[in-house]
Image 1: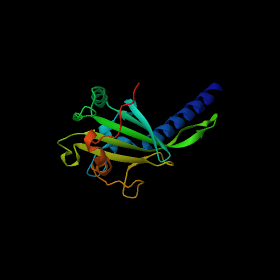
Image 2: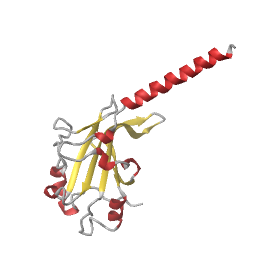
Image 3: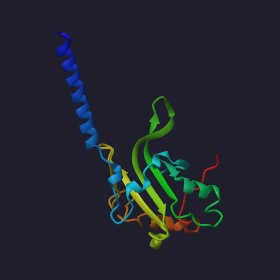
Image 4: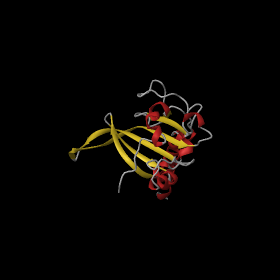
Length: 186
């Protein structure tokens, strides 16, 4: 008889924990619902976290890893853009930026800390004919809430709020089909 109240209490505790967990999960942001006004949607890059690494970089005290979908990887391996050919429509890249910190267990090493943002590029020569065939998007990540939001003119660097937000910078590599990144040797 004494076991039954303990079982009821344990079951109630598990249910409360499950409900609380579900409520927190429901309250968490679904980044795939975000869209740059007049531009790209985060959902167009679903699964980018599992794409292959093209290269890494450091700029302004932030680390970045540049990822690409299989179509973009195949294009790089075929010699694009160094061979003068453009990337095919459907090629996509993601660039994830992190602030940095010293590794506590090995202070000589600088490692990623909190994620700062993620940038996206997609080649679609019809949809983005007025921006070199590429659409761009920046989604900043809030350190405290861990939620994303489209970049704005107040961002550092400032971001236009449309699919052309990256064109001004990328114009200097027009001869590389607007792509800065070089495929790193392996």
